[in-house]
Image (cartoon, rainbow, N blue to C red; front, side, top):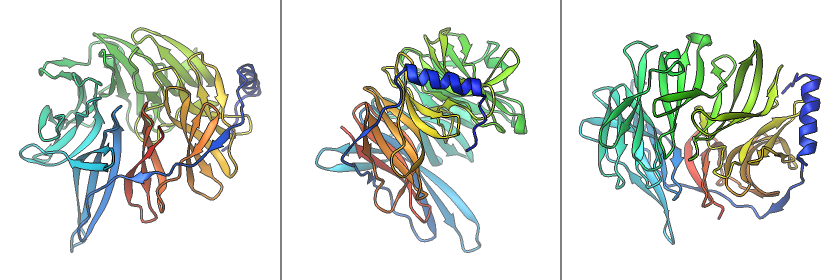
Length: 425
């Protein structure tokens, strides 16, 4: 990848790395291989893809099974089914199919509470409806209108973020739905009203909500993250576009903090920045890296969606840092914003930090010279290789929990997708 960052930016970045004593060699620990989570069997003429989307602090995983059926005439149909998984001592991983409400033909999940309640949507009469599943998983409650989806829920399960598409492509609304049924429309501030569509993508335990606000059309579509709290908002000063790529934002921490990367414009000058926002609403911003030309010198990685699990409760940040020659390495920023660059291991062409947990723990996804993705855990200077289950390769990383459970989605040579787990405690 070519990097055309200005020489001044490159020199400033190099100085920052030296000041932080950044580049440190990594020792190795014995490898830990992942295990596949159990999935339902596919029937004749069916193609099954199962993806995990979230995991609770207790290690309960939420995900969706998608079955594509091809009929004799060549036409295909798709049915999605919501699932949960839990790892039980001396038993292993167990699968639970979540119940669908009466009249629903399919369902998918997006996030999960600390106690295992799941948020998502089901399809009723051909339209999606935002849905809340119970702790037992045996009942589901519709909490949204047709064309709605529950994209986030706070850790306690008190507030659910519901986004509803309007009758036109560029219309819709977002609201917070309390367990009691009280609804709070997310509108009425310049930041929220600047776009035509709003999506709730993260809520913390005290109600600070991260909203993605969309404006523009086609290649000019722009998404901007906004933090909301008790009717007040503050923009996170990055944006993403269909042409330039997404703005990546971490989930909101308990103190209202997020980290984000994307394009930003200051005084008419476009930059690509990686920043830390602390203090919720209104809060303050600290720039970790910035580039005024060409490829970014630092950022987060969000291969699917906008939110990533790259900010730990202790302030640690996992990301990627590129040098003046275009090389990309995984990087870890501590709470004091000092950066440590993890050297590439033998056989790695590039690497990036894709998940983080307290205690200087970072999951690294690397591109191998053999064309495969390689996963490892970096723990304060020590790297542990995390091979995928045999016959599978890494597709995407979901999360590393504080208890040391890593969940990722893997793929085999036929393109089949399944969730996998690593126990790193």
